Figure 1: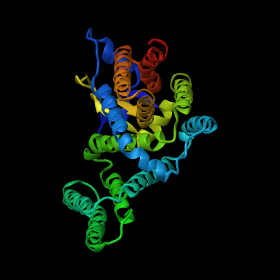
Figure 2: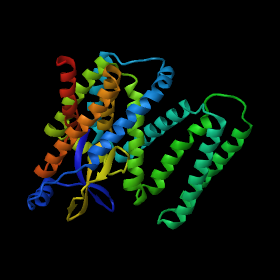
Figure 3: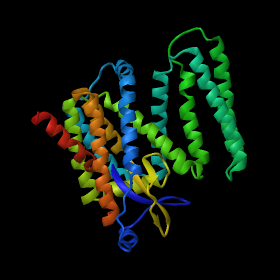
Figure 4: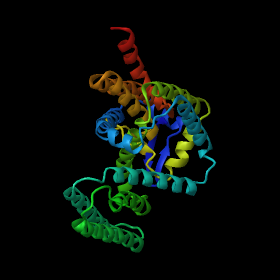
Amino acid sequence: MLSEVEMTKLSGISTLNSNSLNVCFTMSFYMYFDVAMPLTLFAVTLLSVFLNNKAERKLKSTLEEKEFQIKDTVLLVLAMGAAISLMVLIPQMAIMIIFLFSYSMLLFIFTYVFSDFRKTLAETFCLAFIIVSFALILLSFGLSMNSVMSVSAFSALLAFTFIALLYEEVRSSRGERWYLAVLPPALFVFLYMFLGRTPIWFPYLLDLYGVVFAVMITIYLGSLFTWRTSLIFVALLTVLDIILVLFTGTMVSAARHVSSLMLPVLISVPTVPRIMTQWGVLFMSLGLGDFFFAGLIAIQSFKRFGKNFAVLSIFAMSVSFFIFETLILNLGFRAFPGTLMIICGWLPLVFLKKYIR
């Protein structure tokens, strides 16, 4: 969970070192700033809050109204710290398999839980996947990749979707549809396998899936927290983030180790206004954990103080992030704890709300 200054290369994402940043930023008298990532943080967090209101009741019934206790919250933070610390020791192939499986299960669960919609919507869902599969088959011939494997994979997806569409026509029972739930994870895995090293994947599909997973994780885990456990979680996670980013550097090493796989663990956007370096356009990156962190705060603020305070909290967190990001760009930091950048905008609002009427 960190905010990191990055650049793009044809081979993927590489982190700028501090010397490079100093060269780039001290040779000019201009102050560098970026509005793209703060706006992205604002939009994704607001979307998470909006969708959580629509989905929380359904998810809670699926999870049998389970909620984290204080012990569970502490163990979760400790587990996250241990996982991040051990990440650099795990082979990249194993990491790739773990993340692909986890993301696929997340897509399957969400699609399955909400797949009890009307027949017309289910048919539209199938038609959309048929169109996408056919377009990807055509695209496979135009890109320099293993066209035989990719065409076979996307053709199989198209055929399965077509069979699902035919079955939907005669289906009379109600309830969740497993055959629809397998389509999004299958598409995700195929896109990663065959387009993962193409310009289509980074930054477009990578960021798209990053936003999707950030929202899903926020909605899924956000329903398990209460106001009290949320306060404990954000406090412990911020301390952990500061230690792993600023003191041990473990978070930075883990992020580099995983980001080279081009998995959607970060959302990376080019700076606006554009900042150019000798390597190309400068990108700012923020981990999905930080989006979950902001989303959890916003959701709990909504439940505790109402919609207006939640929106104000999201705005304040985005402004705080913008201020810290400006300092990062002009002082040459390679990375900074994203949780600290976010929570500094929220804490003053909570203090004013609770103690100053």
